[in-house]
Image 1 (cartoon, rainbow, N blue to C red):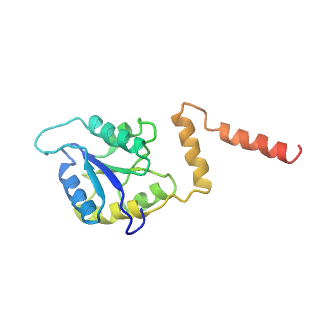
Image 2 (image 1 turned 60 degrees about the horizontal axis):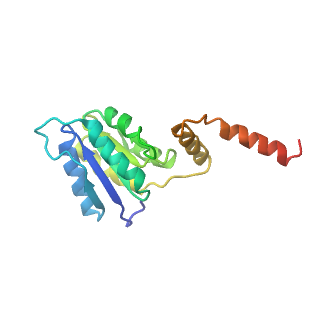
Length: 173
């Protein structure tokens, strides 16, 4: 979302990401975003991160104009679980460049953060950059469509073969 534009953001964390989640929620609310907290609501009790990831990813996949943020200790479990939901495109980001590129090139709609990898001082820059960075489209759109083919259980190379057939037909070959 570009500067000044607000969006609905579903956010969730397991017990190891709870403290960072609280800081991110404050950043998002201060910027005027509509934040929906999908839990957990304590750092004191262990919880199952796949349930949190599913809750956020399923909501983001249904609400195409929303985004999601997930936090756990490493981020690996959350990104794996979220990416099992059709329409969820989660990216594990550990610095500013990865946050920017996952939006520009991959059209990620869920930001995943590993609590052990980031310091609180980095959060605002990474989250706001991720929200403000648009998908570039162009050659990246072709690749994103390939990812969607894989998601549908199809061979992504069919897009290239179809284009080759179309080019051959169009040139009279």
